[in-house]
Image: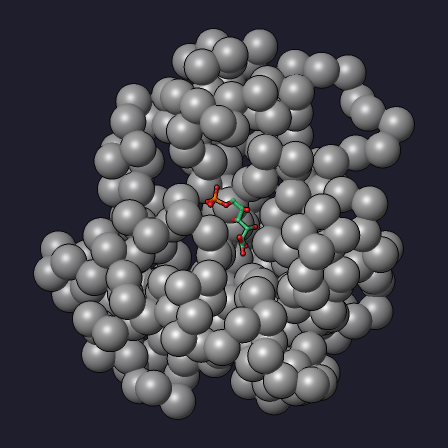
Length: 248
Ligand code: 6PG
């Protein structure tokens, strides 16, 4: 994983500011090049502050939201107004505060039967494919779980072996719940992947990923092999076991 750029920021605020800057840059580049920006948002708690920052005039004014399509990297099997919903978190922190056309916010209807198939059909309908015939996101935002999971690609789950589907439902035994998630083939096909990792609770998994010898069974995050660019953005707390240059 160390071959990818590792950006260590002094504070979580600096991390979120830097990632908001990258989001705005990548949106501007995509819109200039192709007239649209397709971004898959991460769920969980880390990106909330990033989304709130993107909704501030400093950043929101830099993005032509009429040309943005917002997608989701994964979703919990709950209604869209449930406290655990990734869509609800993004709506409250960002989507309700920027002029993005509602038809360009593509929620994963994880509470419905067939939600994964329906989402995969939307991806194929709206997002142009690369030469691999896989829809190519301009940006996929990811968080990192303490067990090395990304999106809802948890260790020891069948979805990690999925090479054909773009979206799949996954039973996460440790959470005793179903999730719906993008699969590695579509995440790896993105032009850019930004990994946001903050807090001392992630320091151990970060240490293992960047300092330990390769594992017989890699963590899901170590299975990432983006065709495009992968950027790690950590705050000092998450990177406390690494040197400032990111080396062990
Ligand atoms: C989710 C996310 C998940 C998240 C990590 C980190 O639906 O929860 O997609 O992959 O990014 O679990 O979560 P935190 O940001 O809450 O630590």
